[in-house]
Length: 418
Length: 162
Image (tube, rainbow over all chains, first blue to last red; front, side, top):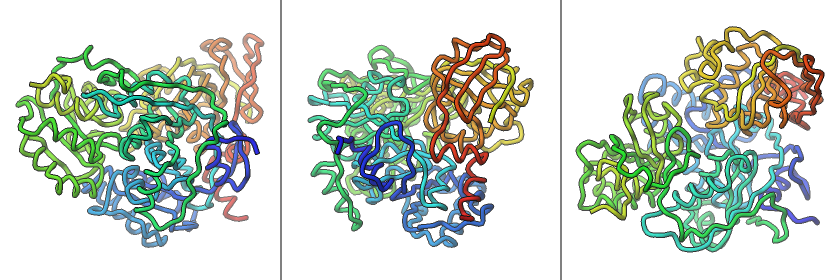
């Protein structure tokens, strides 16, 4: 048997064959199908129009995330439609308001993303769930093929291997590492491929940090980002699900289209400047840029670790009077844990608004920006208009940088905060 | 699945947001006329059925919002030949019956207004103005069947009856 990568093994398993190779078009059955509230129009009306039933409702997870709690009548009706749809089709894994979370975060947190499985998702940042050794891919309307027919098509991607070594420096987080990786790999190579993260620095990372790392692979159009499951993964997932799973890992002699090695101990804090997440700059080169808003949240920056990092900076300090700071925990469970740890109080006492767990300001919802305003954010996108007015500017950065900048009123390195 | 018409040339890295800004996910009335307006305001009002959109690398990159693909269908464009596509955009095109072909050298062999004939089933691009031909990658396997049925919904409808 020829050697395979983790991605090829998972796709082969899901396709019911022994072997697949990059470039091959296959039919495969997803193990889990993740929907978010905003996707109602892509799935609900077409399935009704087809007169179809959801083939295996146990595979379907519906997470309310973008519009929680409902912010207007349209959102309320979208949620109501989902509730009716789930009742009608026998979908029990509806994560309604109060039991909700950003779909990618919730998928890992509840054990829906499992090692060795194929997960299809309606939302762009599905790559996040590769952190637990799951091949998680973002689809579009064709996710209804998974819902109705029980299968979908895939073109098996080539894989890129990224090895991370060394200990991160003070003042940097996994966000800086991820930003460096996408800059060096580049979208010319990343486009349409799977990125596998290996090496001692990855092995030392928490599942949460691995999620951020995998999430960011989407920024260079990778179809998946994955970490081979290890003991930490198996313990983490095993504690969250009774479903069996097989921890598939890459063969040592598997073939990669490119190999990279980075020493994370050499990295400085980085930002993605407008208008694109790939527009990488050192924080030092833009430090001092005045800001009006700071946001901690999203599927790439709303974890307990991110909130903790922000709270460490804000403890005993105040948000600058010219800055609105907003934090949106990635899920209701993260919100509750942040409350237990005292993080919510630390943030609130510093002058940060802590919202319900939601995608929130990342998509220009609650916490939108006005024309000409500048925001520093742990969120996922910074194209013009993403967080509000087309003339607003968004710098993407680590939670340390976002919190330090909120205190200083300008882009600031957390190590330089007095 | 052969389309013949004028070439409309776009460069590298045309994003989903450039093709159709986020607000058109919900505001569908003006969507077709606003398609690609920032990149070429003449495109949407003047494109004719069968015309070929030609683009460089990474056409459709950015968030995977498929209203951009719907907007392109609504313009009546015959199909897209790009040097490369963002993967989610490529999938969405197949789903929405938007014909796509990947041809790395396309920007070197087509100029604005050239008459192109593209076979989207077999992956052949012909520039009728210059006589140059090139091969292109088109969807294969199950994806090809969806293209042949004109998109995902007609494909699923037929599969359901099996």
